[in-house]
Length: 255
Image 1 (spheres, rainbow, N blue to C red):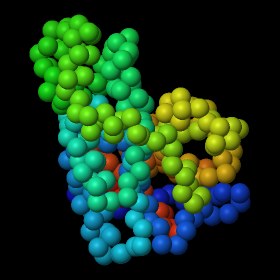
Image 2: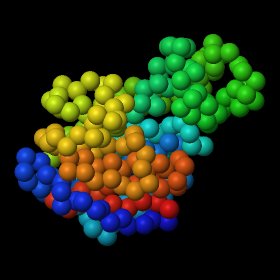
Image 3: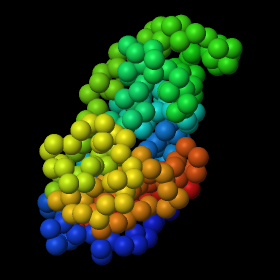
Image 4: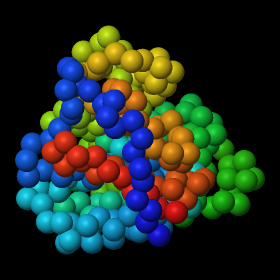
């Protein structure tokens, strides 16, 4: 089911002293960290279809903030669904730290232990790699080879082509956040995908409102310079969508 959310603190959002906005005719649907919850993704996409039908717009843009895989039960199926959705819709797919590690594991076996700690086992199982073999301590060389064989080329291209950020109007969309006091055009990918405390505690005006995920919270989080829409879908069942149109902001989540 879908639940409309009240966005507390929206009036505090300011870019260079004014309320942020998009160009007329655009509507953005920004979706937080999915983490293999295909069920929640399907529910949210169905709601968006209904919303566009009820409130037509010239240019709906879907922005997905990364972390499509790991932890949840249906990583492979989630990637299939996102690719399918992009064939008929304008979609921006951002890179999350989980996709970064997964694709690096194809060439760097030293990252496998870290990936497993971050929920990679569930992803490998979704690609048909034996859970029993994983539980029995299959060596990393075998796992790497199995992942190479199991990963479809279309999925490899999807991971390869993920974007580090997306800018639209007064909004900067990114997986984790940005480093304060560094121009948005000069950010390091490592910060865009991993940063937490220094970004989350900053009150500086970034020149855009940063819409991000990566740090799960029970409710959508609105600051003066950022909006966090990672509501921990894999554990909570809440997958959040932020809807932006001109200077209007609203949100829904699954429950």
